[in-house]
Each structure stands twice: as C-alpha cells, then as structure tokens.
Image (cartoon, rainbow, N blue to C red; front, top):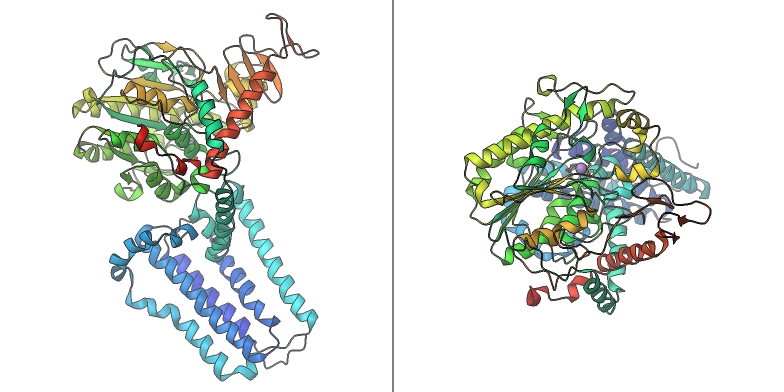
Length: 633
Ligand code: GP9
Ligand code: MN
C-alpha cells in the first residue's frame, strides 16, 4: 500500500471513534440483556465491524476532498441514525423499523413527549462527529489516503471478511437468527443497529412488493372455499357464554402427554387432571398445535385469526402491519376490552406492533410487573408471581373483557429453583426431559392458584376460562429419552406427530355438561369455537377453522409442512399411517387394507396444500385490506 508512515488515515480514526461511541451507546444507554460472555464479545465487536465497513468505503473516492466529505457526512448521518434509535428506544424500549418511520402517526406520538426523551449529556454523542468534521476540514492533506487498486480491494475484502465473521459468530450464538427473526433486540445485539436497518429494509421491501402485486381477485376463490368448509349447523352450545369475560391462558410448552400421566409414580398435573373430570370443563384430548418457526407467536396467530402461520419466519414479525379481522377486533365490536398479559420484552416476536394490528387495547409487558431476583427464573417472572401480580389489573377492568395470559416458566431449558420444586425430575439421559416434569407441575400449581384468585374476586362466575398449550416443549432431539418415558421402542414419525398434541380446556363455570372431546382438532379451530360460545356470528369472517362443538367440520388438521391428521389417517414425513393402529398403510401399493382404500392420504393432502396456499395468499397479499368486515359482522 502506498501510505506514508506518518499518516493515520481519517477513515481509521473515524472507525475507532465512531465504534467506541456506538459501543458505549449499546452497552450503557440501551438496556440490552447480555446473558453470557459470548454475547458481550459480539456486542463489542459489531460496532467496529460496522464502522469499518462504512468508513472504509471512503477509499474508493479519488479526490481527497470527496473522501473527506464522505467521512464527515457519514459520521453525522450514522450518529443521527443511532441517536434517533436511542430517543425512540427511551420511549418504546424497541428499535425503529422502516415501516414505523413511514407511519407519520407513530412519530406524532413521539413528538409530544420528545423533550422528556432528550438529555443534555446527549451532546457528548456528537463529539466524535465534531472531531472528524474538524480533522477532515483542517488536516485533509495528512489524513486522506490514495490507495492503489490492491489497497482498495484489500479494504473491501477486509470489510466483508469482518462482516462475515460477525454474522457467523452471531448465527452460532443464536441459530436461525435471520430466518426465525424473533426480536429486534436480538438482531441489534448480534449484528448492530446499522446492519439491522439494512436487514429490516430488505425484509420490508420483500413484504411490500408481494403486497403491491397482490391479486385481489383471489379473494373470491378463497371465500368460496371458506363457505365450503365452514360449519353450517349451529351447535347446541352456541351462545352459552354470551356476554361473559373471556380469559385465555396460553401455557408455555405444555404438551398433552403429561395430562393424566405420572412421573416417578407421582401425578404431574393434578390440577389440570381435576379439570378433565370437572363437569364444567370440555377437555380436547386430540387437539394439535400447528405452529412453525414462530412458536408461541404462531400459536397466538392461529388462535386470534384462524389463519396459518408462515412456513418460515414468524408472521408476527414479517406481517405485523397487515389488516386482520382478529378475535380481539371482533370482540371489541361487542363491547369487549382486550388486553394481553405477558411478563417479557414488549418487542419479543414484535408483539408490541402486532397486538395493535390484532385489536388489543393494552399489552401488560414486563414493565407492568415487579420482577425481582427472587420471583424470577430463566425467561423472567415466575408464573405464580405473574398471575398474582396480574390480578389487580384484571380487577380494574370494565366487563366484559378478553384477557390473554401467556406463561413463561415452563420454557426450555426448564430451570426451576429448588424451593419451587414439588416433584422430582425424571431420570433419563436428557436433562431437558427430566426437568420438564417439575416445571410443568409448577405451572399446574400456578394455574390452580389463578383459578382460586379468580373465584375469590368474583371474576370467575362471569367468565369462561380457556387453557391451551402453545406448542411442544420437548423436541425430537430428546426422542431417545422420550421413548424411554413413554415405554416405546422408538419414536416413529407417527408418534412424533402425536406428540404435537397440546391440551385444550374450555371451562364454562356453571355449565355442567362438560366432557372429554376426542375428535381431532387444532389451534386453527379455536377462534370460531370461542366466538360461537360467546354468541358471536362468524358467517362473514374469513377463517380456516371449524366450531369444535359442531358436527359439520372439514375433517382434517393441517400442519405447516403439509403433514396432517384426520379421524382415520395420519400423514407424516410422506408416509400415510392408519391413525387407529399407528401402522403405515400398505407400503407397496399404499393401500389401506382394512378399509380397502387406495392411497387414502393423497386426496386429503391436496386439500391441505390448497388450504395452506390460500392462507398464505391472504397474508402475503394483505388481502383483508380489500374486505370490509365491519359491514358483515
Ligand atoms: C417469549 C415467550 C416464549 O415471549 O412467549 O416464546 P417461544 O420461544 O416459546 O416462542
Ligand atoms: Mn412458547
């Protein structure tokens, strides 16, 4: 390289100054949760990587003055971007998205409070810009560089290498960081604010393009199909809970195999088991979770909309700005006040934005709770404290209300304090499975306590209470231990699919005719079922579910990967199983010998794929913006 010794190029100085400042902002001004030294390390390197990447571009300018011009303006622009994020963060504990920037109304919200968000010492954040500005003007000769092609190429190669290194470590620390995209905080922590903005811009433009090219005429096909699959008859339970509050509890990682089961000779879920027997409870024992990568958020999406989540990424994240005709929106029209309770970051799964789109009035996130070292573990507030602290809010609501509670304690890796443990772990090679049982029991106790509090405050009688597992907690990685626990030789794809069952309880105080419901059903069915119980018509809604109390149902539960379950068959990993026996239908000619049906899964598979495609078209095209649901509801 043709650089004289005494020169320290300005782009290097700018990189260092800007990176140090960025790091200080990340570390001390944003409230980023750092769980281990690896995360500390990533947070330290990514400001340097990004700064080098941007400032090193200056070497491509031939003229010295242009080079200097680029450096000072880039420093200023970069600082303004950082600073706007900081101000926005102070108000929302979240990072700006491109779509928010385009939404003037959002910024208006910020406008009124902006003065309280700006601090005097913020001036210090511009000191490096001033320094770079000064040097670029006064010391231009000394600080500009004039590299040969090879020098330029080296700077570029270096930038890309650093970036690749950063992404690689980030992906190692958070597998599927880019495909699952669960949280802006994770992205910023791992790749920095600037790369996050670029990522967000690419994602947004993809979403926007699909939206622009959406074909409105598809809606008529879709509506026709919906008419075909919707239950035509009115069930005996239509309107039995009219005007009641709806309390919905989404239980983290609660699978169905623990219900009425034991570990080390002890009942795992005594409270939920008592609900199965309870005369006011409908317990759905063949109810499937249909989530994909978006996990809890996908289960929420299914429940609120009766649409399918996307096959990759989290729809909460990618399509949080779409038009929906969600459960809360429909309840709002009947005078319900809608809230969510979940003691986690507001930005996780993009909930803060998505809940607005779904029609929630308020989201009680982490900051609504008093979280101490004593009352938290793993992901945060323990379930017992969570329900207890939520009661005061619940009691303050005007009725009727819809409140959704999302628990946390029973989350992978199932940590629990010794003092909260009332049953012993299982004994297998998988600590995950072993520890699952005591945390499930803890949550079972938390649910019982919540029921008692609802009774004590009198809310119970005026409400229906729904308890649903969100998705599996024990992944296939633990199949060996799982087969040991279940007493099976091995877990086949058929068993794997059966393990997607999560419990669903619908508890209607005073109804007296509860029972165990055995037909196959899924999260897609929850919305029409609940609306009908509350006496709300869904005839003009566009959803892919069925009322689980109706006899007229489409007869299959579809999974995102095209697998499905019907009363007679299970299609898993491209194999068609007889659902009763769990055996593949004859492998050679794919003939269900018993029922004399040839290739029985094929026609259902076609319907499943068609339905998934319709649902995707609605989401990608944001097609509900063309439908006036208010007229029809
Ligand atoms: C996060 C909690 C857990 O807020 O809902 O999410 P999960 O990892 O289960 O999707
Ligand atoms: Mn979950």
